[in-house]
Length: 189
Image (cartoon, rainbow, N blue to C red; front, side, top):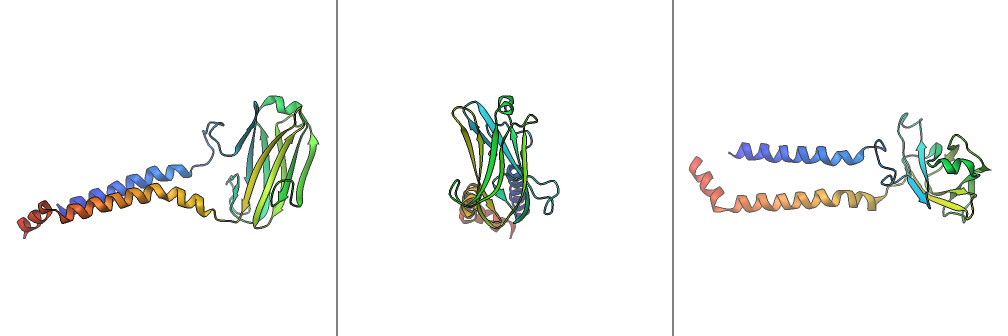
């Protein structure tokens, strides 16, 4: 009986772990409205992708760039109307429009819907601003964290599983302290 309950508990946590790891998937099959890498301004949307092939050949990130170094930044103009508007891109060290400009793509038309650039990003905070030169101008802001750990995000991700684990621990403790459990143990002795 004890072995069966241990197996059930381990099996439960294994299934829970499988469901929880599904949250770590990339951007495949995500609705643009739910994608954290998409910014919306009026009816128009843009999407940022950051690549570091020297660290992960096929890995794609958005705002959390895992390591300092050469980074390929790609902005997709998701709406066809934006391809007929001059669009520029600037990367600032620190806060947007306040820090040092480290990379810039001047305003021009992008008929293929893609703006790309390569830059060396050191550890720290950066801001990326995409500006569509429409009337009125539309600005899309991204806060890039390079080679930094977001402890708040980690804490939020583990809060749910921690609560579940504490609740299950409490249930097991109460069961082990119950008379029914003690009578089962006495029966097998």
